[in-house]
Length: 418
Image 1 (cartoon, rainbow, N blue to C red):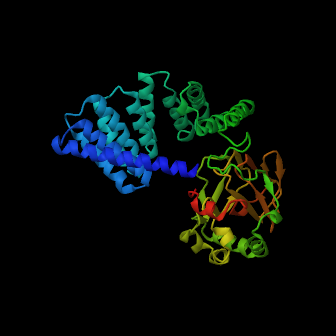
Image 2 (spheres, rainbow, N blue to C red):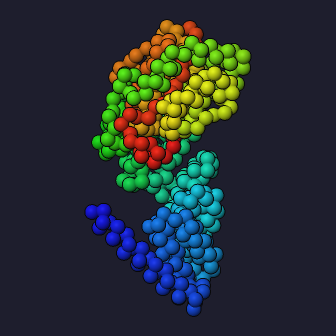
Image 3 (cartoon, one colour):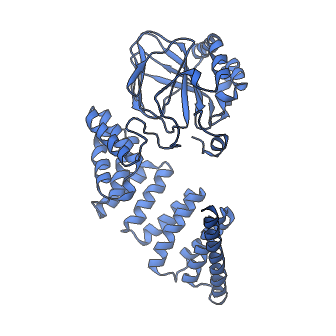
């Protein structure tokens, strides 16, 4: 099978090279031929894909940019090539150039919903959520049943505007529209979460069950989006099950030093503790200070707790998870964290209890447990989890993300950071 695939790729590459040569010859005689220019770009982009070449990708993009600037390019070809151009520019990481290309197309084709939707997505990628919202609303004026626009508009209203009740009809209609692009784990994820936040747990579970049945989620309770499917999945893990005993025992043996250092910093300043940024907090106060993220040391955070970071620096198992973090978490009394799932099943999250008052608890899956000072609680945060603080003083834990123990070294190095 591998040999067959390799031969097929060689055949495709040979055809792409022949096509490129043929289109180049046409362009030698007719330098501005729109169709030959389009063909040349297609051959370059195919070669770029087969060879994983950014150089060829950039050449293909440049040819498409020339095509868009050619006044003789027919409208149908201009529209088709412009949408391809924007897609390839985004893929290359040139999102602002994609925005420029799509703005040009939108001026030429103001009522084309594909262009306006694509422009909305590009604004969303750039964090220009208000502009994206206006564009998706524009699409719905042109095509009231456009599932792509409905789903994305609902997503913005839910995440950016923090208005789950208003987001629900858009997300629901988008998913039910039949548009394949709207049958996406992100939209099921946020529709279910929106139902949870308005108190309709039954409908939330129905959405999650539907998503799991469509293989968008690993299960109803495990709704992470970036996964390796073969990994053992269970909400709670015992420290003895992990091959990271040196890191676990070293941190537990030094928990009082870690506690005293973070308490001293928090009492003295604490300015680098920032509010939780993913809109997971229902009520109260929850702040975090990052020491390691994506396998990289956070110099600013570590300057505040030098002894803790010196300890961590010798514990590669605790700091090399590129799909996780090491951070302090402080939660004030009266806080509640919404039920939520982490982004990936490739890590296990360990909480080292530092200051644990009565009245604090965490549910993962269907089981609720309590922290203890100087001990780790270890769980798979890709499963739904929820936190309550009904005590009288701050709860403080050190969070350490470890790679899932069943990942190979090759997988760890190949997986994209989160």
